[in-house]
Image (cartoon, rainbow, N blue to C red; front, top):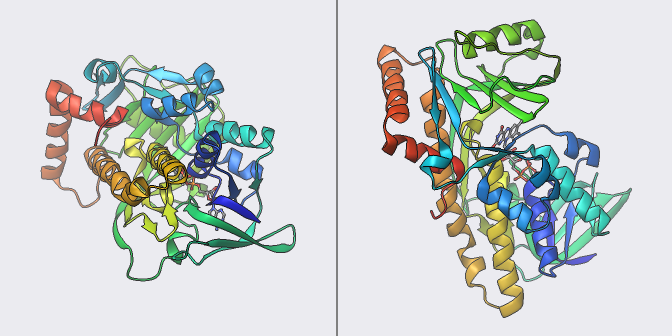
Length: 390
Ligand SMILES: Cc1cc2nc3c(=O)[nH]c(=O)nc-3n(C[C@H](O)[C@H](O)[C@H](O)COP(=O)(O)OP(=O)(O)OC[C@H]3O[C@@H](n4cnc5c(N)ncnc54)[C@H](O)[C@@H]3O)c2cc1C
């Protein structure tokens, strides 16, 4: 097999990259080690920066997003039994966020690729990448019982944090930066209309909680928990009880409904630098992870592949490697901004076991500042909707 670009991973990064390249006339093959159904059902992010929603729409992949995506102009922060609205759009010259599930983006992109009869292979195994420092890198894999080799000009490592691309880079090349958090999120998807028009981030003495949504009929809710929390200890009734306590307000009720799905996600910050080794380019979670509090993971992945698609297009058209050579640095500027914002939101809103009253007072003071000072609220807002120029 031969393609200009070999893409490992059919998550949002790999699928979007393949789509953007196709529109520029660049051929790619996407290799995914899970089945189509699994990839389409995997419940993850759901908040898009406006620039990312626009990217998908402008690229012809946002027809359903435009119809079904829910535009939000603000979020709410809750602490000390009060809610305070951060008017995102008022503070950022009219920019907003769009609520549209990652699962839906992935379904839309897969459908476009399958309808166009472009190569996208699910259920591949034993994927490995080779000759990355040469002009003819290759990807070996097994599919349908046979071993195959895909030869390409460039390999895009879009295979997430646990993929094979980043670990294939020789020791000593990458610098890695990370932080583990002593908690995780227990998240549920519930068949009940969201109880609030906008997302609610709640700071509470029992731990953080988030009220979010996936559609007018589906609520997505989270409570801070231990990173190794045993779901067996969380029957549905206990989850609702905890959500009621942490999100509850006088005169407001959290509506309950059947829980369709539940899971625990650990929290980590991680960056690998540079995001390139020879002809291998890393994008998305393969290169960086953020805790989900800032809603940045999916957005960062798509910012990366937008830059990678532009750089590859320029390289093929003009034979100039300037953008490819600048790819890693350009991505990392945004990555570190998002790393800081995600760490800051996480530190502001969660309860740390090690925290004493001094830490708690600092959190509350900062929350009051962010919700009463236009300067502080604007800083949060512009990071949340996505900084235009980093
Ligand atoms: C459980 C969970 C919940 C999350 N919740 C949120 C959230 O609420 N908000 C938010 O902003 N972000 C969230 N994130 C982060 C967000 O979903 C990711 O940042 C986003 O998925 C990154 O996209 P990606 O394409 O880079 O990586 P991924 O989505 O991880 O895609 C990588 C793809 O590569 C495939 N793959 C892996 N190894 C191989 C291999 N060897 N060969 C071939 N294919 C391979 C995987 O199966 C996968 O399909 C969450 C992440 C997780 C794991």
